[in-house]
Image: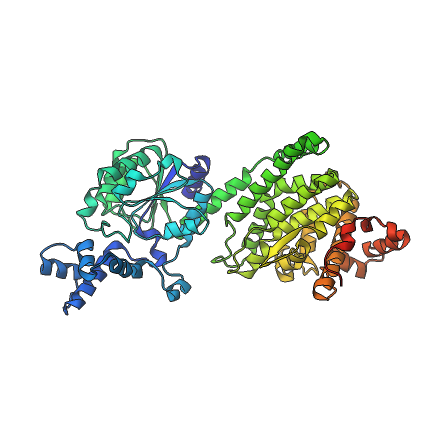
Length: 567
């Protein structure tokens, strides 16, 4: 039997944007956000304390007997705080974390909220209905620069952007915690304003439904809205944690819903997100897509009439990769280091820049001198994605891996074509912003900085300890992308070593001029030089330079000799 979660992942992936979420308090439990009734009970205790009375063991019963009415969220709140500002401050304590709570991971977006935000960012989820008052969903979306349309009152329902025109709509059927009109009693949950019902009817009729963290026992109006819809366009999935009540089972039967047992909301949405990403990777653009892009690029390169098309082709793919890398599918906080996560991130980075990498390799190999600015402009764009400095260092450093791949790809392609002008521009003119300073890219994007030796060895499996594991990894991973221009393995290895040695020399020269220390990153050529009896790239370049003197090709480009301040 197929795992129901796999079936759900296929449904979400195959029907992008047509599944809505219905989220209850269970989604926010790990954030230790109180339920509406827990807040009411706590407010009653506060009210009893102010009156000098003991409301235990049943605060709700005490309130009903004393005031001859059932507890009302708004009335209790008004009794405790006179002004709107005072009420807001009182409520914030339940929903907004103190510094200590934030450090403890309380009242902040959970793994479920973060995974949902990623599904929204990718366009798989566009509508979220929630009975929760908190703003954890909104915060998780804001953290990845998305601003949802929020409907929390009948008035906001009237003036809201139509669902079809919004990237994400959050419908808070019980209200928002800063609005005293929130619903929590049985009577309040029995009926919705017609304006809210109109929107719910539209969602339940036009969208599939994934229900999580909602018991279905108390929300009569919400149950009624679901049951009103007779549509069978898309499936309903009802997630179960523990025992379901009679009304939930009735709803599952009426909607012919698929029931899914889960450990927690966090696990559900993390796994759903991972499985959808796996389907994306499996079904990503056919490899011919990069070949088609390269075929177009080759036509544009050699005909000046197409210089605008060439620019647009390269920069559009650059922007596509830039946005993919910037959407924070690589969080640097809240994700522990593991070999599996390291390898997954590396593979995802490689997948994102695959087409752009092919375009830049072709450009650096076949391109004209007048087009060199384009390859450099693309590299700089990717290298200058803003980074959050707070997080796990290994993930912060790894965020430069795409730029390191492009640097090597362009450099080796330039050497393969003996295009030293392009190589000089890449190694000495491309810059990045590092803190408040503009620095040469080669000083910022270095293999030992992107991945420390221990991390590189873990990436390679950890069974063997390599002197320069990142260099070994790049040597392996760049073989196929460069195969069209370097079909011979020995020639590829020679160009790889030559690039790494020249890269180290340029680094050492720039470091000497800037920091008065002569150092450059050592690649595979280093250990080969210390062990090999054959003629190494170091000896080869030394002999070439000695024999050719001032006519040695890498010395022709003026950039090599004039970049940087004088020593």
